[in-house]
Structures are given as structure tokens and as C-alpha cells.
Amino acid sequence: MAKAVVLGSLLSVGLAGALVALAAQAAGGSYVVPGSQAATLDSCVEQTDFMRRNHMEVIKHQRDETVHNGIRSTKHSLAGCVECHASGDPAGGVVPVDRKGQFCQACHAFAAVGMNCFDCHATVPSQGEQGQGSPSRSPLAASPRGAGVAFTGQRSGEGYPQ
Amino acid sequence: MTEARDTIDRNRRAFLGAAAGLAVAPGVLLHTVAGAAPRSAPVTSDVRWGLLIDTAKCADGCTACVTACDEENGLNLQVKPEGQSEAKWAQQRSVWIRKAKLQDNQTGRITNLPLMCQHCERPPCVDVCPTGASFKRADGIVMVDRHTCIGCRYCMMACPYKARSFIHEKVTAQLTRAPRGKGCVESCNLCVHRRDNGQESTACVDACAREGHQAILFGDLKDPASHISQMLTAIASRQIREDLALNTGVRYSNI
Image (tube, rainbow over all chains, first blue to last red):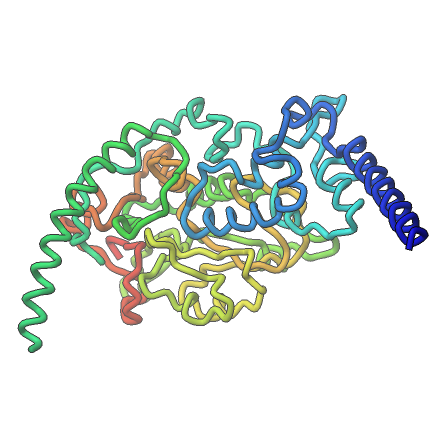
């Protein structure tokens, strides 16, 4: 019985050690790229632990909200991920987030999970591309066509054609 | 029985209408003040976006709207696959607006017009889509949810306007506002990113105005006070293939 307890505690110590080692690898090796906006912040748009486990759910929910309901004001946008996690290269350009060793690619490679977002989505920030809905920036303010007001006038819903 | 129900319905509608009026007024003010802020509330069917195109003002040989659309939606970033002939590429590359030239064989009269997704009220592309990827947004914009598009291209077959394109090859250069990838169908979405960011018009409308033609008018078809609604009331306009009774959001005059 005593032997079993000792064995059990040894095992748990060993397990804890292994976990700490893993955590150190992941945390020491936080995949946040130096020089990116993310490196200057304490946490992501949610707590880091939450984002590590749930970022895919967060952006999946947001994608439906954006595509079907047109909501582009929230902090959970993929464009926001790219904007914050992309780093500059010495030549003055921006390194795509899906390039080897960059934030998205490096962690997905570690976790051995495929990544399809960037088959379609841009891998570098929009850089003042007009008409982006990132809440952290206001490219529209600088745009000559940005001052437009889309919603004016009375809406009766009985106009031509329904 | 039916009559009684009708009466109740009418009263209810009148009440709801008044309530909506009260609710909408502050909303309008909010949007006006917010101006170009990104949208935070879901789109509603209070608006229906549409275009009115005056073909008499559409100049022969001018492709300003097509070029502007290409730049706005990253279509100019498409690259011809290696080894593909120019002729095949011209057929396969994604195009959202096509300039069409019509000739009346009896009189010889030539009409120029830009042809894009007509944003039907009853879109055939939505009817046939097996996954629900092809859908109509509450504000009348017909678009493709690329996340659920499986690339079957039924919608391309169903569209009477040949408005949709398929992305055949891997894409490496995209704009943040216009994602694009291999295996999905796409078409004009009335510059949906501009809608959601509270901007006034579309890229094609701006380009046409810059050229001095002002052949395209963009606006809310449900708002009787909008310029487009007033023009539709004042002048004769037609839908292309109106025999199909799709109630298109894009209307043409002088054809």
C-alpha cells in the first residue's frame, strides 16, 4: 500500500514535471514574433490561454457574423489577427503570417494542425487598404471617399420595389 | 373569420409601423453621426441596395467601371497560370463586370452597358446552391459565403446573366477586404465592404462619375426619398430578362 502511494506520488511528480517542461517549451517559446504589434501587448483580444485553445472557434463565429450580417466592428476578426501578429522584415516590408517561423505557421506546425484560412485570406495587414473594418485603425478617416454617409433619409419599407 | 383576422393584422401592422418609426429615427441619427464606422448591428431588410444604369450615358469603349472594380476587389491581382493560353485565360479569369454591346439588327442601334450580378430578389443561384453558400443578405445583396462554397458551380449554370466566375487556380495575392481562393465561385457583391463600413457608393459608380459619364446610380431601392428611387419613378427603366420575374436590383434605362 505504502509502495503504491510512493509510486503514485512519484508518477504524479513526474507527470507534473513533464507538463511543466511542455508548458515551458510553449510559453518560453511563445510563438509571438518579436517586432509584431502583439509582442508589445500583455495579452491577445482575450486571455492568452483562452485564445490558445479557442481562437478557431472565435474567428469561425465571427466569420459568419461578418459574411451574413455584415458586422465588422468586433475585435475577433481574422484581419485583426494578421494585423497584430505580422512582423516587419529588414527590407521594410511585412512578413506574411503563414510563412515558416511566423506566428500562425509556427504554432500550427508545432500542433500539427492544418491551416486553411490563408488559402483565401490575405496574410499581410491591409496597410491602409480602403474599406477595412478593423476597430483598431481608422483608414476611412484618411480616405477621400470615407466621409460618406450611407444611411440617410426616412425608411418606410414600402418603396419600389420590395 | 378571415376578415376578422385581416382587421387584427392591419391594426397590428399600423402599431408596429409606428413603433418602428420611433425606433428607426434615433437609429438613422446614430448612423449619420457614426458616419464611416464599421457596422456593429446586423444588416436588415429596411434597405435594399440596387443600381440604375443609364445605357445612353454608357460610352462605347470605356471600361472605367470594370477597371475600378478590378482594383477594388483585387481582381487585378489574378495571375495567369503558367502555360495557359491568353485566350483561355481571358475566358477563365474572374470578372465581376462585363461590358456588353447590343445591336438591334433591324435598326442598327447600338447600346453599351455594364453587366454584373443583378442582385435578384428571387435569385436562381440561391435556389440551386446545395450548401447554402450562395445567399441573399438581408439588404438585398446576393453573394457567396466562400466558407461553405464547395465549388460545384451549379449557381454559374443557373445564373441567366453569366455573372459568376470560378477561381480555378491557387491564389497567392489577396486584398484583406476581398478574400479569394481556389475552388470557390464569386461575383459582384455591390462592394459589400463599403456597405459595412458606411461608405456612400460602389467603386464602379465612383469611376463612372470620375469619367464624367455618371451612367450608374447606386442607392436604396426601398427608400422613396433616395435619388435612385426618384429616378426610377421619373424615368422608364427595365430589368434584363424581366420575363424571368426575378425582380432584379440592377435596373437599366434606355434599352
